[in-house]
Structures are given as C-alpha cells and as structure tokens.
Image 1 (tube, rainbow, N blue to C red):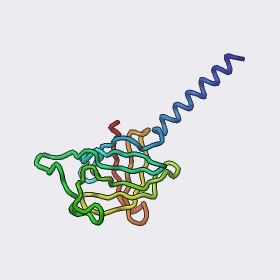
Image 2 (image 1 turned 90 degrees about the horizontal axis):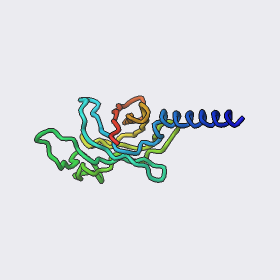
Image 3 (image 1 turned 60 degrees about the vertical axis):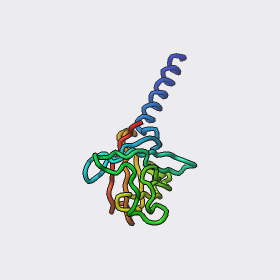
Length: 150
C-alpha cells in the first residue's frame, strides 16, 4: 500500500514538473534578444518584467552595427518619448495575463515612433516570446520572435 502511495506521489510530481516545463514558467519576465522581423538580425536586449500583474519591457542594450550611434535619441517619437534616449526606454507596457497570452497593452517602435496595440505569448517552452504589434485587430499586424537570454 505504501509503495502504491509513493509511486502515485512520484507520478504526480513528474506530471507537475512536466506541465511547468511545457508552460515555460508562465511568465515572460526576463531578458530577451529582439530579432527584427524584416531583416532577421538581432537589434537589442529587452528586460521584461511583471509588476502588480502588468507586464512591461524596456531596452537594456542596443546591438549596434559599426558606425551606428551608441546613444540614439527617439527623434521620430511623439509625446513623452520625443527626443529621449532609446537605451533604457520602456517601450512595452500595460499587458495583462489572459489565458495563454498577455494582451491589452501597447508597444512603441523606436524606429518609426509609432505605438501599436500589443500581445505576447510564450513559445517553445518559454525559450521564445512572440510579440505581436497591431492596429485594430490582432489579425492585422506583425510579429517578432524574441529569444530568451536568461
């Protein structure tokens, strides 16, 4: 009888650990390498964090090509972002968990200064983050896939 209880407990533990690994820990918090969806090149390292149930993301490091300005300003941005340093800028905000994704927030593209509605989803067991920016409906937009760095 004790053997059955121990064996049953072991299988429950293995199942719980497996489900957690498949879910990718359930939180997008961490450091992510952004990959440009047009060029396929790495652009930056983003810090994503969750605070009081809301997800934010800021640019921690820029991955620059030779000759690029190491301290660019967001000259195409509007409002509070106008002419502010891109490095350290919080460009993703307001995302809240909704089933298997985080939605209801926004993302700002420093390359063109535009702000889009945003949703994010963990992929590949938490190793990738699908980041979708869109106007109106999520079907009309574009996605980037960021790679977890830590």
